[in-house]
Image 1: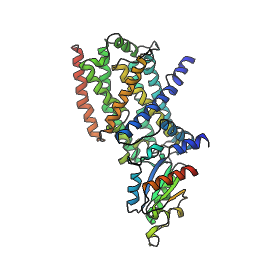
Image 2 (image 1 turned 90 degrees about the horizontal axis):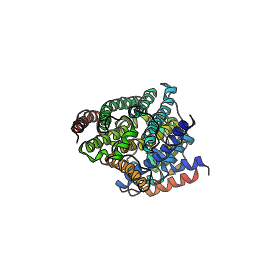
Image 3 (image 1 turned 90 degrees about the vertical axis):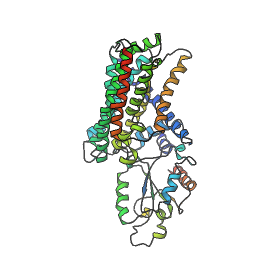
Image 4 (image 1 turned 180 degrees about the vertical axis):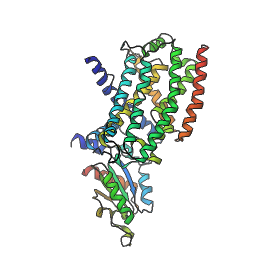
Length: 310
Length: 137
């Protein structure tokens, strides 16, 4: 019990994932600034933002709508992201939880933040938030099948293993899955799914800043918004880690391999940031057809290639 | 200086309210966010919703229609909120001060923390104003 609480609250859960995620968020903003020939914020900027929102600002409750669900949604989001983070990071740091089939649980836990955003936005009683919520719903419906196909491909490649620990071990004994044609296809599809899950720019349709002014988060202020920021930091760490675990061979906590592990995560985040900086926001219709037609097609081609052994 | 006020000063998020402006001040405000001046160095971000804002920038002359909207925006903002009046119109009314639609400079409607005069103020002047505001609070 005490070990589980430690896993959840300190390492590799809330505290660790939050701190690393905040640094990655700074990395993302710094790279964005460098791409635009700006200087960018100082390294501790995400912490200043978080503590300002948590400690200084007032939380305003909506007059119309449901205040309880409005306030509970960010807490659920942090909970879901942290749980998913624990399940992803424990195998990555070589701590065996002895739990088989955790990949399925991770898949479900990763949708909790998005669902709680939708709940919170619909509970706020703001029409723009409702627009954002319905867009987020459509986005989930479009990328979730693709993400499931990616995970199915990984499971097939690993020889019907459903636990992350086994998948990482298989890759470390042989070679990372990305070293084959089907692996490259799965990596491309997975990167776009992560981009949509994080709601970064080509897919930031639910929180479009210019048209619906932050959409799903429009009514959030103060501590509630701080929790949403924390969820975003954690997701920015655990989703690239999941890609590293599934396709790039995971982390190795010995010698020079520590550097490689860090560089893998940073590389994935850099790729996400560059995609975000070089693309305009697309319409929800385009996003749905992008995932349902093109990305599913790529994923199915990858599945066929895997079944032939490529 | 406490931890709270330190964090607050390091991360000011700005919401921009344009009254009946001639758009010169708007352009100069946007200039502050461009590569040359880059206010994100100090953690200053432009946000889309007033609920996330720490600073309310008001520019342009405030006429009778704008007055109600400005009051509404100010009431919707989570406290503490700092108000900055930018440009001659926002500070005093400028050449519109005697117009029949003019509803008063910003400080007659809501409390103002900093005035940045000029028609329009240079981006350097806006940054200097923000620095003085941060030093004051």
